Length: 440
Image (cartoon, rainbow, N blue to C red; front, top):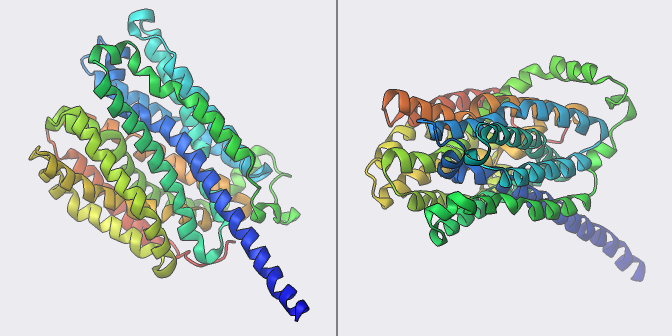
Protein backbone atom coordinates (compact mmCIF):
# COMPACT_ATOMS: atom_id res chain seq x y z
CA UNK A 1 0.00 0.00 0.00
CA UNK A 2 2.66 2.49 1.05
CA UNK A 3 4.93 1.63 -1.88
CA UNK A 4 2.00 2.03 -4.26
CA UNK A 5 1.18 5.46 -2.84
CA UNK A 6 4.81 6.49 -3.12
CA UNK A 7 4.94 5.36 -6.75
CA UNK A 8 1.79 7.30 -7.50
CA UNK A 9 2.84 10.47 -5.73
CA UNK A 10 6.32 10.66 -7.27
CA UNK A 11 5.12 11.33 -10.84
CA UNK A 12 2.51 13.71 -9.47
CA UNK A 13 5.13 15.69 -7.57
CA UNK A 14 7.33 15.80 -10.68
CA UNK A 15 4.43 16.99 -12.83
CA UNK A 16 3.54 19.67 -10.28
CA UNK A 17 7.13 20.90 -10.22
CA UNK A 18 7.23 20.98 -14.04
CA UNK A 19 3.94 22.86 -14.14
CA UNK A 20 5.19 25.46 -11.65
CA UNK A 21 8.44 25.83 -13.60
CA UNK A 22 6.53 26.31 -16.87
CA UNK A 23 4.26 28.96 -15.34
CA UNK A 24 7.29 30.78 -13.91
CA UNK A 25 9.05 30.66 -17.27
CA UNK A 26 5.98 31.90 -19.14
CA UNK A 27 5.41 34.73 -16.66
CA UNK A 28 9.10 35.69 -16.70
CA UNK A 29 9.26 35.92 -20.49
CA UNK A 30 5.95 37.83 -20.68
CA UNK A 31 7.04 40.32 -17.99
CA UNK A 32 10.30 40.99 -19.79
CA UNK A 33 8.38 41.38 -23.03
CA UNK A 34 6.05 43.85 -21.32
CA UNK A 35 9.06 45.99 -20.42
CA UNK A 36 10.54 45.74 -23.91
CA UNK A 37 7.39 46.73 -25.76
CA UNK A 38 6.37 49.44 -23.35
CA UNK A 39 9.72 51.05 -24.14
CA UNK A 40 9.34 50.54 -27.86
CA UNK A 41 5.66 51.46 -28.18
CA UNK A 42 5.53 54.64 -26.15
CA UNK A 43 7.34 56.54 -28.92
CA UNK A 44 4.41 55.93 -31.27
CA UNK A 45 1.92 57.48 -28.88
CA UNK A 46 3.68 60.84 -28.54
CA UNK A 47 4.85 61.29 -32.12
CA UNK A 48 3.00 64.67 -32.41
CA UNK A 49 4.94 65.93 -29.35
CA UNK A 50 8.22 64.42 -30.59
CA UNK A 51 7.63 66.18 -33.91
CA UNK A 52 7.31 69.57 -32.19
CA UNK A 53 10.30 69.04 -29.88
CA UNK A 54 12.77 67.63 -32.40
CA UNK A 55 11.51 68.89 -35.80
CA UNK A 56 9.95 72.32 -35.17
CA UNK A 57 11.25 73.81 -38.45
CA UNK A 58 9.94 71.06 -40.70
CA UNK A 59 6.70 71.30 -42.65
CA UNK A 60 6.56 67.50 -42.58
CA UNK A 61 7.28 67.13 -38.87
CA UNK A 62 5.05 64.08 -38.35
CA UNK A 63 6.66 62.22 -41.23
CA UNK A 64 10.11 63.18 -39.91
CA UNK A 65 9.11 61.75 -36.52
CA UNK A 66 7.93 58.56 -38.24
CA UNK A 67 11.43 58.31 -39.73
CA UNK A 68 12.58 57.82 -36.15
CA UNK A 69 10.16 54.91 -35.90
CA UNK A 70 11.37 53.46 -39.19
CA UNK A 71 15.08 53.74 -38.30
CA UNK A 72 14.69 51.32 -35.43
CA UNK A 73 13.31 48.80 -37.89
CA UNK A 74 16.04 49.37 -40.45
CA UNK A 75 18.67 48.26 -37.94
CA UNK A 76 16.58 45.36 -36.60
CA UNK A 77 17.96 42.79 -39.07
CA UNK A 78 21.49 43.51 -37.86
CA UNK A 79 20.37 43.05 -34.27
CA UNK A 80 18.44 39.93 -35.25
CA UNK A 81 21.42 38.31 -36.97
CA UNK A 82 23.78 39.26 -34.14
CA UNK A 83 21.60 38.12 -31.24
CA UNK A 84 20.15 35.15 -33.12
CA UNK A 85 23.52 33.65 -34.00
CA UNK A 86 24.75 34.22 -30.45
CA UNK A 87 21.61 32.55 -29.11
CA UNK A 88 22.26 29.44 -31.21
CA UNK A 89 25.86 29.33 -29.97
CA UNK A 90 25.55 30.08 -26.27
CA UNK A 91 21.89 29.68 -25.34
CA UNK A 92 18.71 31.72 -25.15
CA UNK A 93 18.61 32.95 -21.54
CA UNK A 94 21.60 35.32 -21.58
CA UNK A 95 20.50 36.96 -24.82
CA UNK A 96 17.05 37.73 -23.41
CA UNK A 97 18.67 39.45 -20.42
CA UNK A 98 20.98 41.51 -22.66
CA UNK A 99 18.21 42.70 -25.00
CA UNK A 100 15.96 44.01 -22.24
CA UNK A 101 18.91 45.90 -20.72
CA UNK A 102 19.87 47.48 -24.06
CA UNK A 103 16.28 48.54 -24.73
CA UNK A 104 15.94 50.17 -21.31
CA UNK A 105 19.21 52.06 -21.82
CA UNK A 106 18.24 53.35 -25.25
CA UNK A 107 14.81 54.46 -24.10
CA UNK A 108 16.13 56.20 -20.98
CA UNK A 109 18.73 58.01 -23.09
CA UNK A 110 15.96 59.28 -25.36
CA UNK A 111 14.19 60.67 -22.31
CA UNK A 112 17.15 62.88 -21.33
CA UNK A 113 17.89 64.22 -24.82
CA UNK A 114 17.84 68.03 -25.30
CA UNK A 115 15.37 69.23 -27.92
CA UNK A 116 15.98 71.12 -31.16
CA UNK A 117 15.67 74.46 -29.38
CA UNK A 118 18.66 73.59 -27.16
CA UNK A 119 21.17 71.93 -29.51
CA UNK A 120 19.75 72.35 -33.01
CA UNK A 121 20.15 69.63 -35.61
CA UNK A 122 22.13 67.45 -33.17
CA UNK A 123 18.84 66.75 -31.35
CA UNK A 124 17.13 64.74 -34.15
CA UNK A 125 20.46 63.02 -34.93
CA UNK A 126 20.73 61.80 -31.32
CA UNK A 127 17.05 60.85 -31.41
CA UNK A 128 17.75 58.59 -34.38
CA UNK A 129 20.77 57.07 -32.57
CA UNK A 130 18.59 56.15 -29.58
CA UNK A 131 15.97 54.64 -31.87
CA UNK A 132 18.75 52.65 -33.52
CA UNK A 133 19.76 51.19 -30.14
CA UNK A 134 16.16 50.21 -29.55
CA UNK A 135 16.09 48.53 -32.95
CA UNK A 136 19.21 46.50 -32.15
CA UNK A 137 17.53 45.30 -28.98
CA UNK A 138 14.22 44.33 -30.57
CA UNK A 139 16.11 42.38 -33.24
CA UNK A 140 16.80 39.72 -30.62
CA UNK A 141 13.96 40.30 -28.18
CA UNK A 142 10.71 39.03 -29.66
CA UNK A 143 12.24 36.12 -31.56
CA UNK A 144 14.29 35.17 -28.51
CA UNK A 145 11.17 35.19 -26.35
CA UNK A 146 9.27 33.11 -28.93
CA UNK A 147 12.11 30.59 -29.18
CA UNK A 148 12.46 30.38 -25.41
CA UNK A 149 8.77 29.58 -24.88
CA UNK A 150 8.53 27.22 -27.86
CA UNK A 151 11.42 25.15 -26.49
CA UNK A 152 9.96 25.04 -22.97
CA UNK A 153 6.33 24.28 -23.88
CA UNK A 154 4.89 20.75 -24.31
CA UNK A 155 4.00 19.91 -27.91
CA UNK A 156 0.27 19.65 -27.25
CA UNK A 157 0.09 22.99 -25.37
CA UNK A 158 2.57 25.08 -27.34
CA UNK A 159 -0.03 27.35 -28.91
CA UNK A 160 -1.63 28.19 -25.57
CA UNK A 161 1.64 28.71 -23.70
CA UNK A 162 3.19 30.89 -26.42
CA UNK A 163 0.07 33.02 -26.71
CA UNK A 164 0.92 34.53 -23.32
CA UNK A 165 3.84 36.27 -25.01
CA UNK A 166 1.60 38.75 -26.88
CA UNK A 167 -0.23 39.35 -23.59
CA UNK A 168 3.04 40.86 -22.37
CA UNK A 169 3.42 42.78 -25.63
CA UNK A 170 -0.11 44.18 -25.54
CA UNK A 171 0.14 44.99 -21.84
CA UNK A 172 3.30 46.98 -22.51
CA UNK A 173 1.62 48.90 -25.31
CA UNK A 174 -1.49 49.49 -23.18
CA UNK A 175 0.49 50.70 -20.17
CA UNK A 176 2.40 53.13 -22.36
CA UNK A 177 -0.80 54.39 -23.98
CA UNK A 178 -2.63 54.84 -20.65
CA UNK A 179 0.36 56.73 -19.25
CA UNK A 180 0.42 59.09 -22.24
CA UNK A 181 -3.37 59.61 -22.07
CA UNK A 182 -3.06 60.46 -18.35
CA UNK A 183 -0.20 62.88 -18.93
CA UNK A 184 -2.08 64.66 -21.72
CA UNK A 185 -5.13 64.95 -19.46
CA UNK A 186 -3.19 66.26 -16.45
CA UNK A 187 -0.69 68.54 -18.20
CA UNK A 188 -1.11 71.45 -20.56
CA UNK A 189 0.29 71.22 -24.07
CA UNK A 190 3.13 73.56 -23.10
CA UNK A 191 4.00 71.39 -20.11
CA UNK A 192 4.05 68.29 -22.31
CA UNK A 193 6.41 70.05 -24.71
CA UNK A 194 8.65 71.33 -21.92
CA UNK A 195 9.09 68.18 -19.82
CA UNK A 196 6.00 65.94 -19.71
CA UNK A 197 6.97 63.93 -22.79
CA UNK A 198 10.13 62.74 -21.01
CA UNK A 199 8.35 60.91 -18.19
CA UNK A 200 7.38 57.74 -20.15
CA UNK A 201 10.95 57.36 -21.43
CA UNK A 202 12.55 57.89 -18.02
CA UNK A 203 10.38 55.13 -16.55
CA UNK A 204 12.24 52.71 -18.81
CA UNK A 205 15.18 52.48 -16.41
CA UNK A 206 13.37 51.00 -13.37
CA UNK A 207 11.21 48.83 -15.64
CA UNK A 208 14.34 47.57 -17.40
CA UNK A 209 16.02 46.68 -14.11
CA UNK A 210 12.90 44.74 -13.06
CA UNK A 211 12.80 42.91 -16.41
CA UNK A 212 16.49 42.04 -16.15
CA UNK A 213 16.04 40.65 -12.63
CA UNK A 214 13.15 38.43 -13.73
CA UNK A 215 14.94 37.08 -16.79
CA UNK A 216 18.17 36.29 -14.97
CA UNK A 217 16.18 33.88 -12.77
CA UNK A 218 14.91 31.80 -15.70
CA UNK A 219 16.36 28.41 -16.63
CA UNK A 220 17.88 27.64 -20.03
CA UNK A 221 15.64 25.66 -22.39
CA UNK A 222 16.00 21.87 -22.06
CA UNK A 223 15.85 21.50 -25.85
CA UNK A 224 18.99 23.59 -26.28
CA UNK A 225 20.80 22.03 -23.33
CA UNK A 226 20.14 18.51 -24.67
CA UNK A 227 21.35 19.35 -28.19
CA UNK A 228 23.85 16.77 -29.42
CA UNK A 229 27.42 18.09 -29.54
CA UNK A 230 27.68 17.12 -33.21
CA UNK A 231 24.69 19.35 -34.04
CA UNK A 232 25.95 22.47 -32.26
CA UNK A 233 27.29 25.39 -34.28
CA UNK A 234 29.99 26.42 -31.81
CA UNK A 235 32.67 24.88 -34.02
CA UNK A 236 31.79 27.25 -36.88
CA UNK A 237 32.89 30.83 -37.43
CA UNK A 238 30.18 33.48 -37.46
CA UNK A 239 30.27 33.70 -41.25
CA UNK A 240 30.07 29.92 -41.62
CA UNK A 241 27.20 29.77 -39.15
CA UNK A 242 25.29 32.42 -41.11
CA UNK A 243 25.97 30.62 -44.40
CA UNK A 244 24.78 27.27 -42.99
CA UNK A 245 21.63 28.90 -41.62
CA UNK A 246 20.74 30.62 -44.90
CA UNK A 247 21.77 27.89 -47.33
CA UNK A 248 19.92 25.13 -45.55
CA UNK A 249 16.70 26.96 -44.73
CA UNK A 250 16.17 29.85 -47.17
CA UNK A 251 12.82 28.52 -48.44
CA UNK A 252 11.44 28.24 -44.92
CA UNK A 253 12.82 31.68 -44.10
CA UNK A 254 10.81 33.10 -47.02
CA UNK A 255 7.62 31.42 -45.78
CA UNK A 256 8.37 32.78 -42.30
CA UNK A 257 8.86 36.24 -43.82
CA UNK A 258 5.50 36.16 -45.59
CA UNK A 259 3.72 35.31 -42.34
CA UNK A 260 5.63 38.10 -40.62
CA UNK A 261 4.45 40.62 -43.25
CA UNK A 262 0.79 39.83 -42.58
CA UNK A 263 1.34 39.95 -38.81
CA UNK A 264 3.42 43.09 -38.54
CA UNK A 265 1.90 45.31 -41.24
CA UNK A 266 -1.38 44.85 -39.36
CA UNK A 267 0.32 45.27 -35.99
CA UNK A 268 2.06 48.55 -36.79
CA UNK A 269 -0.88 49.91 -38.73
CA UNK A 270 -2.95 49.54 -35.56
CA UNK A 271 -0.42 50.41 -32.85
CA UNK A 272 2.00 52.69 -34.69
CA UNK A 273 -0.02 54.58 -37.28
CA UNK A 274 -3.73 54.52 -36.51
CA UNK A 275 -3.70 56.97 -33.55
CA UNK A 276 -1.94 59.58 -35.69
CA UNK A 277 -4.12 58.80 -38.75
CA UNK A 278 -7.31 59.26 -36.75
CA UNK A 279 -6.12 62.54 -35.26
CA UNK A 280 -4.27 64.11 -38.18
CA UNK A 281 -6.23 62.84 -41.18
CA UNK A 282 -9.72 61.90 -39.98
CA UNK A 283 -10.10 64.71 -37.47
CA UNK A 284 -10.74 62.71 -34.28
CA UNK A 285 -9.26 64.36 -31.19
CA UNK A 286 -5.93 62.85 -30.10
CA UNK A 287 -7.19 61.70 -26.68
CA UNK A 288 -10.25 59.76 -27.92
CA UNK A 289 -8.28 58.34 -30.87
CA UNK A 290 -5.61 56.87 -28.61
CA UNK A 291 -8.24 55.72 -26.10
CA UNK A 292 -10.12 53.77 -28.78
CA UNK A 293 -6.96 52.02 -29.98
CA UNK A 294 -6.06 51.22 -26.37
CA UNK A 295 -9.48 49.70 -25.67
CA UNK A 296 -9.13 47.48 -28.75
CA UNK A 297 -5.68 46.32 -27.59
CA UNK A 298 -7.11 45.51 -24.16
CA UNK A 299 -9.79 43.35 -25.84
CA UNK A 300 -7.07 41.54 -27.80
CA UNK A 301 -5.08 40.90 -24.60
CA UNK A 302 -8.15 39.14 -23.17
CA UNK A 303 -8.92 36.90 -26.15
CA UNK A 304 -5.44 36.10 -27.49
CA UNK A 305 -4.81 33.14 -25.16
CA UNK A 306 -8.18 31.60 -26.04
CA UNK A 307 -7.22 31.66 -29.71
CA UNK A 308 -3.82 30.20 -28.80
CA UNK A 309 -5.53 27.31 -27.04
CA UNK A 310 -7.91 26.87 -29.99
CA UNK A 311 -4.92 26.61 -32.32
CA UNK A 312 -3.72 23.58 -30.33
CA UNK A 313 -7.02 21.89 -31.22
CA UNK A 314 -7.74 22.91 -34.80
CA UNK A 315 -4.24 23.94 -35.97
CA UNK A 316 -2.47 27.23 -36.56
CA UNK A 317 -3.19 27.46 -40.30
CA UNK A 318 -7.00 27.90 -40.17
CA UNK A 319 -6.69 30.82 -37.74
CA UNK A 320 -3.93 32.53 -39.77
CA UNK A 321 -5.93 32.06 -42.98
CA UNK A 322 -8.99 33.64 -41.35
CA UNK A 323 -6.88 36.69 -40.47
CA UNK A 324 -5.50 36.92 -44.02
CA UNK A 325 -8.93 36.76 -45.63
CA UNK A 326 -10.32 39.40 -43.27
CA UNK A 327 -7.46 41.70 -44.27
CA UNK A 328 -8.32 41.26 -47.93
CA UNK A 329 -12.09 41.69 -47.71
CA UNK A 330 -12.71 43.96 -44.70
CA UNK A 331 -9.94 46.57 -44.85
CA UNK A 332 -11.70 49.02 -47.19
CA UNK A 333 -15.08 48.82 -45.38
CA UNK A 334 -13.54 49.46 -41.95
CA UNK A 335 -11.61 52.52 -43.14
CA UNK A 336 -14.75 53.89 -44.80
CA UNK A 337 -16.56 53.38 -41.51
CA UNK A 338 -13.86 55.24 -39.55
CA UNK A 339 -14.21 58.23 -41.86
CA UNK A 340 -17.66 58.90 -40.39
CA UNK A 341 -15.63 60.40 -37.50
CA UNK A 342 -18.03 59.72 -34.61
CA UNK A 343 -16.41 57.71 -31.82
CA UNK A 344 -18.68 54.66 -32.18
CA UNK A 345 -17.92 54.34 -35.91
CA UNK A 346 -14.21 54.72 -35.25
CA UNK A 347 -14.37 51.98 -32.60
CA UNK A 348 -16.41 49.66 -34.85
CA UNK A 349 -13.84 50.22 -37.61
CA UNK A 350 -10.83 49.71 -35.34
CA UNK A 351 -12.04 46.54 -33.61
CA UNK A 352 -12.06 44.35 -36.78
CA UNK A 353 -8.47 45.43 -37.47
CA UNK A 354 -7.62 44.19 -34.00
CA UNK A 355 -9.37 40.88 -34.68
CA UNK A 356 -7.35 40.51 -37.89
CA UNK A 357 -4.19 41.12 -35.89
CA UNK A 358 -5.00 38.68 -33.10
CA UNK A 359 -5.32 35.83 -35.62
CA UNK A 360 -1.57 36.19 -36.26
CA UNK A 361 -0.58 37.36 -32.80
CA UNK A 362 -2.05 34.24 -31.17
CA UNK A 363 -0.46 31.71 -33.54
CA UNK A 364 2.84 32.98 -34.94
CA UNK A 365 4.82 32.91 -31.65
CA UNK A 366 4.27 29.15 -31.46
CA UNK A 367 4.61 28.58 -35.21
CA UNK A 368 7.63 30.45 -36.55
CA UNK A 369 10.42 28.98 -34.36
CA UNK A 370 8.89 25.51 -34.79
CA UNK A 371 9.60 25.70 -38.53
CA UNK A 372 13.37 25.34 -37.90
CA UNK A 373 15.64 22.77 -36.21
CA UNK A 374 17.08 23.54 -32.77
CA UNK A 375 20.69 24.20 -33.78
CA UNK A 376 19.70 27.12 -36.06
CA UNK A 377 16.25 27.98 -34.66
CA UNK A 378 17.03 31.32 -33.02
CA UNK A 379 19.19 32.60 -35.89
CA UNK A 380 16.96 31.44 -38.75
CA UNK A 381 13.79 32.76 -37.12
CA UNK A 382 15.54 36.05 -36.32
CA UNK A 383 16.54 36.52 -39.94
CA UNK A 384 13.11 35.66 -41.31
CA UNK A 385 11.32 37.75 -38.71
CA UNK A 386 13.48 40.85 -38.53
CA UNK A 387 14.34 41.30 -42.21
CA UNK A 388 10.68 41.29 -43.18
CA UNK A 389 9.58 43.35 -40.18
CA UNK A 390 12.21 45.89 -41.20
CA UNK A 391 11.20 46.02 -44.85
CA UNK A 392 7.44 45.88 -44.44
CA UNK A 393 6.20 46.04 -40.83
CA UNK A 394 8.20 48.81 -39.22
CA UNK A 395 7.98 51.04 -42.27
CA UNK A 396 4.18 50.71 -42.38
CA UNK A 397 3.44 53.99 -40.49
CA UNK A 398 5.93 55.91 -42.65
CA UNK A 399 4.67 54.40 -45.92
CA UNK A 400 1.01 54.86 -45.01
CA UNK A 401 1.55 58.46 -43.91
CA UNK A 402 3.55 59.25 -47.06
CA UNK A 403 0.91 57.67 -49.35
CA UNK A 404 -1.90 59.64 -47.73
CA UNK A 405 0.17 62.83 -47.92
CA UNK A 406 1.07 62.26 -51.58
CA UNK A 407 -2.33 61.17 -52.87
CA UNK A 408 -4.85 62.64 -50.46
CA UNK A 409 -6.60 59.25 -50.53
CA UNK A 410 -7.63 58.30 -46.99
CA UNK A 411 -8.09 54.66 -48.08
CA UNK A 412 -4.38 54.16 -48.74
CA UNK A 413 -3.86 52.38 -45.38
CA UNK A 414 -6.60 49.91 -46.36
CA UNK A 415 -4.78 49.06 -49.59
CA UNK A 416 -1.60 48.39 -47.62
CA UNK A 417 -3.55 45.96 -45.40
CA UNK A 418 -4.99 44.18 -48.45
CA UNK A 419 -1.44 43.63 -49.74
CA UNK A 420 -0.49 42.15 -46.35
CA UNK A 421 -3.52 39.83 -46.45
CA UNK A 422 -2.67 38.47 -49.89
CA UNK A 423 0.93 37.77 -48.85
CA UNK A 424 -0.31 36.14 -45.64
CA UNK A 425 -2.73 33.83 -47.43
CA UNK A 426 -0.05 32.62 -49.86
CA UNK A 427 2.38 32.01 -46.99
CA UNK A 428 -0.16 30.10 -44.90
CA UNK A 429 -0.78 27.76 -47.83
CA UNK A 430 2.98 27.18 -48.18
CA UNK A 431 3.72 26.45 -44.50
CA UNK A 432 3.42 23.02 -42.85
CA UNK A 433 1.02 22.60 -39.96
CA UNK A 434 3.09 22.60 -36.76
CA UNK A 435 0.36 22.30 -34.13
CA UNK A 436 1.02 19.30 -31.86
CA UNK A 437 4.16 18.33 -33.74
CA UNK A 438 7.46 17.70 -31.90
CA UNK A 439 10.32 20.12 -32.54
CA UNK A 440 13.05 19.05 -34.94
